[in-house]
Image (cartoon, rainbow, N blue to C red; front, side, top):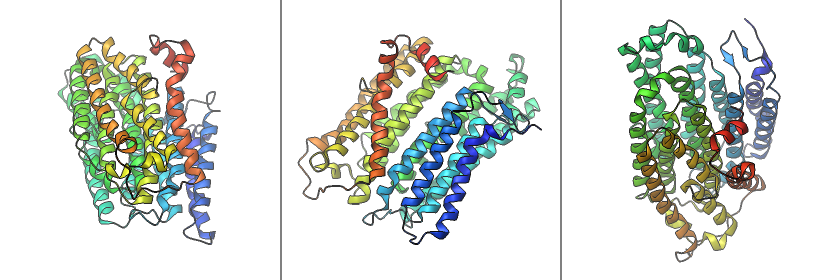
Length: 486
């Protein structure tokens, strides 16, 4: 068995950083000191990200072919590292005494985040069913603990619900993988892809396996009707973990779908494009319509996240590179934009102790920069040009148009209009509604300012890159493939 550890350098650095933070906690004078732990976590993530940039010429497989690396894997890992780094940067705002969901045990908190991050990165490079499933569990199980991190009934309830629904989703997936193994007799993803030829399309077990795998992926991506865990988990979890869930769960689900549904069973997608279109329609419509009725900020963002999964699903309507590149770009855009929004909400919720939408009244006067950052993020999620959200949606909508599903483009555009309405509800509270007498000047740490600034500026710059690159959006697929090198 060939063993090339340089391929695993980013994962090794992330895991080593997690253990280093845990050990360093033994020598800290104050158990409430989070600065050293957060700095160590950020440095570790930066080193892992830098090490990934030097792996383009490295051997492509190790561990007997169970762990592989290509350009797409590197891009996905950099997005995951960026997302985790931003979450850690904006987390210090959740260490305030006023909130009942105040985060404690900082070293352990950052360590668990790094462990689940390593699982996601291993998932990206998994090349057989066993490695893939073990990596998925390493990425998922720590999220259950993080959801129930604070000692409140709400957080504990959210963790239990997430655990139960996550176990059900994992069971669906494992059952589907069992069918795949029984049909092919192989564990390697490449071998399975070769074995699953068109002559086996008549095997009913293959369709059942695809349905079970789709259900497992649906739980991670919060697709309808597998979305029911998200609102309670988002509301009950500490706000930084809600932010991490919104990105990490989506990223894990997308990686899993790319590995299984696109690479291994891609030939099954073409006959079911209409079913994918219906599933995307139901997911985005449910998320948008229910979000209109929400008054709790975190439940509001949960349904917003569900609707975004509906847009993301449109990329699976083709097995051509355009679909893959559009989904990868949208995942980057979504991570930056969503974390920019959560960066503001973390500061607000954990310093005011209020989660109601109306509590945002007066924030534009007391904290104009925070209000501006939140407004930019919300407009990005709604898809307002020239922000990155618009560009990402344009690429996904063009995929549906390329396969002839113009009605889906119309439905998605209508849903974007609905989303603009409920995103404007928050903007109205900040800028138009009478000022809340209890509104206060919010304090934000330098690290949180840096994280929020990176996410906000990144969500704007990513939307301008296509114009700078070739001046038009008509050549989006060529531009994406060149820029992402896929």
